[in-house]
Image 1 (cartoon, helix red, strand yellow):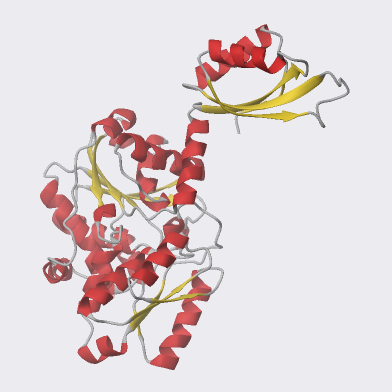
Image 2 (cartoon, helix red, strand yellow; image 1 turned 45 degrees about the horizontal axis):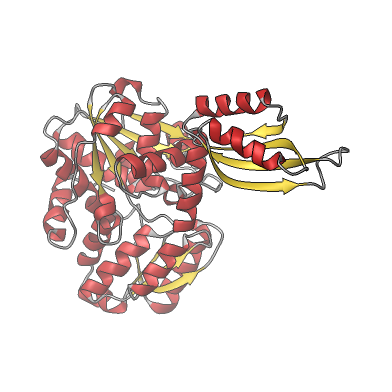
Length: 406
């Protein structure tokens, strides 16, 4: 496949007015914690909360009339499906999406609300794709690939054009990568116009699709593992995307699940914006020290989407608080006589901590029937505060059993 800058420019004109030119503000707090001069390209501001709308609208508008009437289908974990569903509805094109069983509930229900026919099938993208191919043959639908269709890649590349207009002193772009369509489009646009700008991909350690492809010299299939960055779990980088990326991406780094979770929390706290796991990957890489050469350089983080399941978000926040030392759990041995619990609470309060939950454990507290385990979840300021609290408890005669932060 050969895709050119001209096709990305054509896509920009084609989708104008149908998608949002998303803001790209400077982030002072994120710059302070990473050492780079950061701006955030907020694609979570799109109507369906993801950059995927760009490629979806471009691909739909490129269809011949007869294929529009028959309808389109795609296999997607969520955001591509949302983009197709929304713009299919706007353009009067019937949309069917096949989602693997790990697709977030919020994305499934939103697709249905937007009028798409949703089928849940398969344990991974490959099984969902097989079902979509069956429906293509049975119903004459047109398949639109979520990350490897040239029209999709061209649509995503419009982000690169916007970045160059919004950030004249841009020196680097850090972008999440799963199937590679977003990174390929952005890299092609950026490197065609400003080849000195560094283009960097960030993967989850649970996916590593592009890393594996670069090592093998071709796209290879990787086993699916659970990841908070579900938008990156595509099993393989696309062949068309890889052909573009191979010569245009300067660096690829990977980040772990804890780093992604912490980045989601930092975006929520410092930028007041909700992002999904894949969208948090670029910030996670910066916070984890994976990109030290970007210190002091004007860098754009592509915040790809904000469609995170609220139930997952609440767990991510709690895990982030634990990581920061702002939430801790310990088991203290107290007297089971009147006043034992009151004294424990007094010591915790005197140390400046706030009790969130206490559970008594008598059955497994040991041979001393006059003692009881008090399992305490406590809100603290930071890791040093946790250490000070534990010292205070020991000094006041409260032994700690199986002390742990998680």
